[in-house]
Image (tube, rainbow, N blue to C red; front, side, top):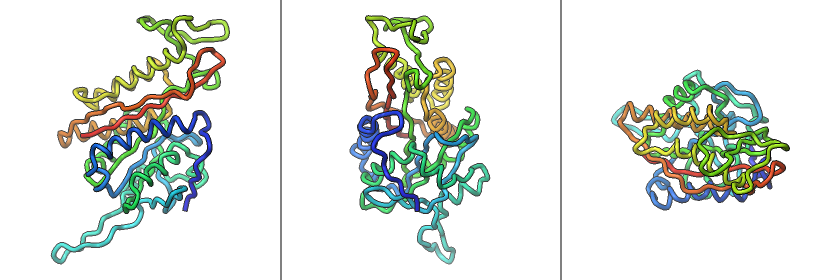
Length: 304
């Protein structure tokens, strides 16, 4: 069992800000689509690797996670056997199936305990699915290429297409400040030219604050991910180009890429078209000078 005790504060952001943004999306989906939460038996959680280098994706070696409000079993044991005629039908657990592909690494217990990108979602999921017999499939996504995002997404797409499967992708948005070695800044609201990098000798424009520039930067990225009528494949390409252009410090860029790869696979194989809607955006603090720092959080839901 992995004991996931929720930290009082994230390493680089305020927990209350993360709580507001995350719960908005999950609650929105379950409030407006009650059947989704009622019918869900399995929850995939994709998060970035913060503590060890990973050129691929990794699965937990644990049997269950313990949260302050209850346990969450991992999908590693077969469900009850049912029969159709003389042939027994046994539900193969998702983690076993994924390991059998040979594409996933195993995550050690220390790395598992240290990874907050998955940990921070667990109590909310336990509460949302309170009283329900759900199992989780946590997947840590490493520093992979766009093609690998597409490939891993294709592997996961068949699960996302199931009515009994719910998926959460863990990410934040811009990490701004010298402590993150990222001081990207638009000089004014209407600037169409290149951004600048603020330093102690290059100050922000007095009429356009740093936090306004950060919001604009993040919203550009969010716009590339907004699907309907844009396809998931086009959104994936646009998001990769945006990251290349701005170098925005979005920790969950690769889990987001895997999700886009899965949705693109479903578009091609099953004609299932995706719609993504943003429901909340927050910054941990409002940066005004080069001495300040902040982390942005955004939440969205996807249906297809």
